[in-house]
Length: 179
Image (cartoon, rainbow, N blue to C red; front, side, top):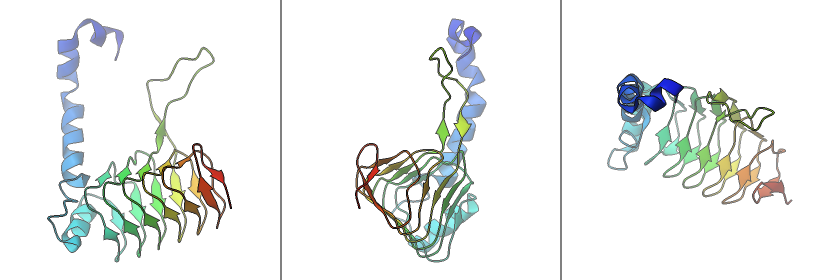
């Protein structure tokens, strides 16, 4: 918040209405409503495509997920388990035949820290890429700017902060190659 918004919270709330309205539209177009398990899979895919998400022909799962922007693409043959979160302010590219466990979180925004230790208010976006045939376990988290190599396995609960080599098994916080 700016100095003026801190002094007048009512004015700040009114000024935030356009942003709040925009976020509500995103939630309607790419949020849990369109990925409800009450809807058949073909309809979930179609609604997400209408919301701007690029989804391959044979993407399975997609229930109770959130897609934060149109800059997300998921290749054919992928399985996206329930509750996955694609923050997506930066580009997220998931190549074909990947599997994402329940509640996987993929983030693309970060904040820079200056020399004085202050955090920048404005976000900076970095792309995330998950290459063909990778598997992310339940509640794995992928941070901004990471590329996961083809066929890599990310263990449940791992936090991926750096690029992963193809075919490796990564586990831990932060994720390290274990095999």
